[in-house]
Amino acid sequence: MSDADVAAEVSLDRIQRRLDAIWEIGRTDDGGVTRLAYSDEETAAIEYVLGELDERFTVRTDSIGNVFADTDPAADRAVYLGSHLDSVFNGGRLDGALGVVMALEAIEVALAVGEPPVSPTLAVLRAEESTRFGQWAIGSRGALGQLTVEDFSATDQSSVPLWQAMQDQNLQPRDLDRPTIDLDRIACFLETHIEQGRVLDEQDEHVGVVTSIRAPVRYRVTVEGDSDHSGATPMGMRRDAIAGAAEMITTVERVGDTAAGSGDLVATVGDITADGGAINKVCGRVTFPIDVRSTDRSHRDEVEATLLDRLEAVADRRDLDLDLSLVDRSDPVELDPSTTGTLASVADDLAVPYRRLPSGGGHDAMNFQHRGIPTGMLFVPSVDGVSHNPNEATPDDAIRDATTVLTHALLGDPTAGESPIAEPESND
Ligand SMILES: [Zn+2]
Image (cartoon, rainbow, N blue to C red; front, side, top):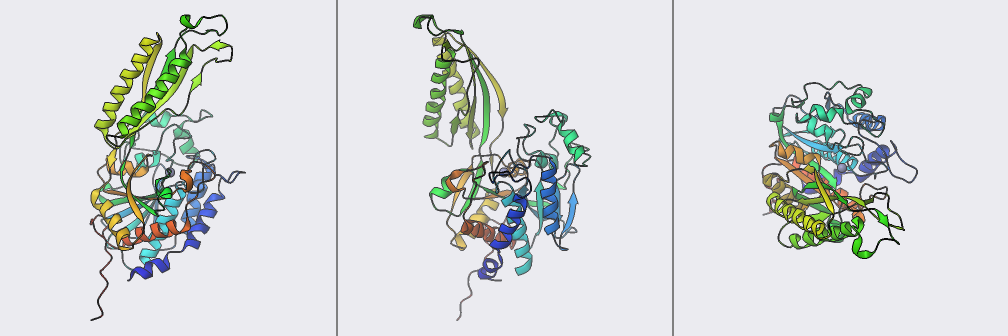
């Protein structure tokens, strides 16, 4: 098998045809897609993918609806690869779906041109997006035995609990604390995803080899002062919650900016609500979220402590009441260096323009690595960094290159740490 065989077999037409077919399921008027977790649309998309699998695949659906399609069900070890098919409200055509379709393409090409030493298993994980139930990665957490009873009572916008939504899709979840898959069988987990940022696109790189996944610590901040008349209340007598919140928000940006100079970190205030605000009022109550992420937990925790101190100081100086409630604290994870090394080494051998980078968003892959399963992740560029939006796009040549890298990884042991592509034989 030569490099040329793989590149010739990877079919962009087949990939785009499948993406188009999945796009039709839940497609919105402006070209986006709404295929929520445990909706009929998500189920239909999974059924479409199952319909694309030929007799080489043996399919198993677990009790929460994840699909695992083995190419050698008798094998002791398998490389699991895939992603998710659910979406946010009016999301894009590529988020999740591309990772499933590319995994399928890589498996098919690997089987066509050679013999993968560790048999591949296509993984379609349910309900990755938190849009519907406020819980993310339900499928992968369930597969790994990490769901709790509280997760199952989470409700959607119509007060339908998760367990009910699962039953509506003919699923009967059971033994929540037990993995639905044999974890010892998983040699490694591989996921491909759109970057959802603009790093690769701006550098004209086709592939990102993800080194680590940033995890957030999140707060909901409530600032309280006095609600007063804007004309009748002298400046010196105000407790202005909006002005205080504004100072706090720029403080978050400044602290984040400084901290980014000494280690991986991003700090964001992405929303603000002024309760009962009006043009003729001094606003008495403001809420906003803070999201701080890093691949380095100790750096993130230091920045968190600094931030909370600074916000308290602003509140004290302005005589405002401050409530900081913790919403989320997740652990960042470094992906398996050997598996990451294999992916980078294949990209090197193929002269694909790539870079190593951290993932800013959480992915199913993160849960596999947290469970101790060697995990590797590839990114493809998001044009202009657009994601969770109908305008998601990735250049064709990047899709082709990333699929080729993934296929070559399957043709060796993906956890070997080096490319399986043989040195060209000399003609002497
Ligand atoms: Zn996704």
